[in-house]
Image 1 (tube, rainbow, N blue to C red):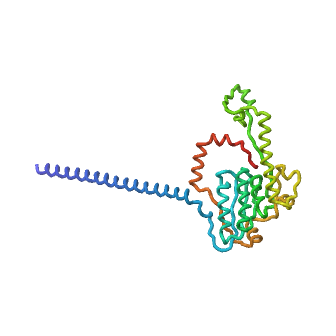
Image 2: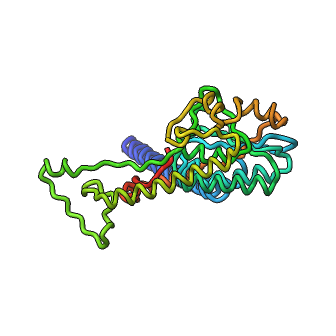
Image 3: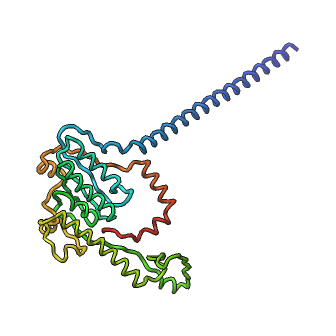
Length: 320
């Protein structure tokens, strides 16, 4: 009898210990889960706060610039020249102003590697170069890497001097408006285009509708006008150095070596050599404004939302 009581007591004690261990394990697990939730919330707060900081203040200082003493200021113009892109007036203009405002900068070098793009963005940058050059009385040079064509040359022509590599591609002074016409394809497939407009020319440039001679002439007149604006800017910027021929403004492009002979460029040189030998301030400071991560994400999101609107604008004129 006594042995049975002893066994029951041991069993009860073992069950109690097991229950206590299970309860303690549950408590520890809940505490760990609560700490993880708090840590995760804190990490998200830090991430969101960092993104907000980058969006609001990320472009307030020149990229990578540690400004002290005499130096050559540099602003990079790379890729397509387009609104809200890395080579947009929105980013280039404040970078140029920051570079020239700094008392230590002896000159500004525009480091260009671009096939062209928007004539509007190029015109804004060209106008600002001319204004800043007079305002700060500091030279502005253009240094070409691989390519300086169309809208990129539109910008470069405002500089005091243009330096190229002998194998750079320079020129392409012209304007284009491109697209496709699918009218015949639609007829062959038996597909009917149903387009409703209010305004006789509202469907202008629609790829599924026939293009009238009137609309074609209207577009050509617009292209000719923009082309003439481009020509006037180049003539104004290059002055007597330009050795113009009928081919100069035909849309052709040339090597850097040929461009020098045509007066489209002034000599060969790189960013380092211009800073060292022309500006006489070998130290380089990069004032280029960069598109930060948050802005890239916002633009990508907006691009997905507005893809249809962007597609409708692809036929606008470009200098390329």
